[in-house]
Amino acid sequence: MLGEAITFIVESEKLKSVIRRSNPVGMTRHENSAEHSWSLALAATVLIPAVAPHLNELRILKMLLIHDLVEIDAGDTFCYGDQTGKEQREQEAATRIFGLLSPEISQELHEAWREFEAKETAESQLANAIDRLLPLLQNIHNQGGSWAEHHVTYDQVYQRNAELQHSSPELWSYIKKLIEAAHESGILPQKRNLE
Amino acid sequence: MLGEAITFIVESEKLKSVIRRSNPVGMTRHENSAEHSWSLALAATVLIPAVAPHLNELRILKMLLIHDLVEIDAGDTFCYGDQTGKEQREQEAATRIFGLLSPEISQELHEAWREFEAKETAESQLANAIDRLLPLLQNIHNQGGSWAEHHVTYDQVYQRNAELQHSSPELWSYIKKLIEAAHESGILPQKRNLE
Image (tube, rainbow over all chains, first blue to last red; front, side, top):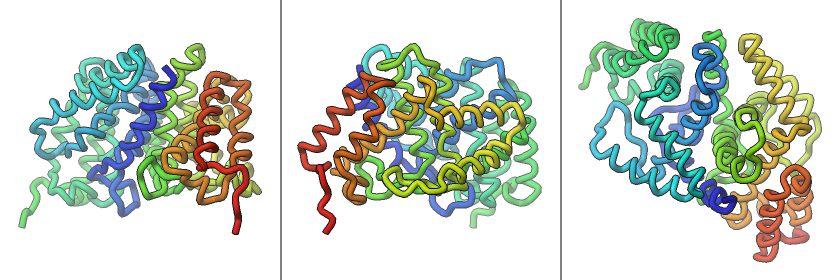
């Protein structure tokens, strides 16, 4: 059981070389999926007491810590880009990577990953909301960041985050104001000028 | 409460530019303290069921997620290097950084940081053990890594990890074998030849 855990930990190091589109605030390099996952889990520890103290915090933290591990095999798929084959690739990756663990731990983490992906429980909905909030904060504090680089529009960002209004109205109300402010300051135009 | 949480989250991005001595397994760059913190929290989720299922998992995860935030102000201090002024710098940093949060969340996380540093509870002892295990795994899988670079010896590594024998005998027994194997394969000499 301990040996399998160590094998899994060593394998997980590979997530540090999966590169995302967004930059950490104030930095010129792109971030990797490992440090991104840390940001989400840390954010959860301070957001849950503020917006959803009744939820199961431990399950949310575990979902956020493991949600991107599948990218070790499947790579990072840009949320505003082509999603073809993503689901199949990620399911195979989950089977391989969580399969490195001994059965009981493997099952729990694989289940947490499925829960995160299905977005059916309140815990997974908040976890997904936090996964969307972080790049939004980064892009706002980086004068547009990956939005500017990939010609992402106000409508796309609004639509991607609007499902939050059901799962976490308080967080959605806050994020909505951020998106509006980004639009008004010119960071997030209604329509990109694709010259 | 939500506004303070967002300020704290944006501030925490700075941990991604605090660089440690060790490299992620198989990579030629040094790692930063944010991705390191992710590794520790992830490792905890698979190690706790294996070696200490009776402990409070949520508290261990929170300690590991926040334990390095003080490095935003105080920098990373190499564990085999000069420790002068470390404690004072880190205490001031904790007061400033956790002070960004609203009082109740601030108090909980500041307390978690103090608990991690004091190493008095079983939870903080396991958290500290995991903080030592990860660079050990990295150095072993990177043919010596930061040990080789900084002339660290078998005796130093053995001594630094031996306190584990009280808090987690099973983990210590595993780590001891890793240290012995590293010594036998020449990665970790008894005495460094400082030419």
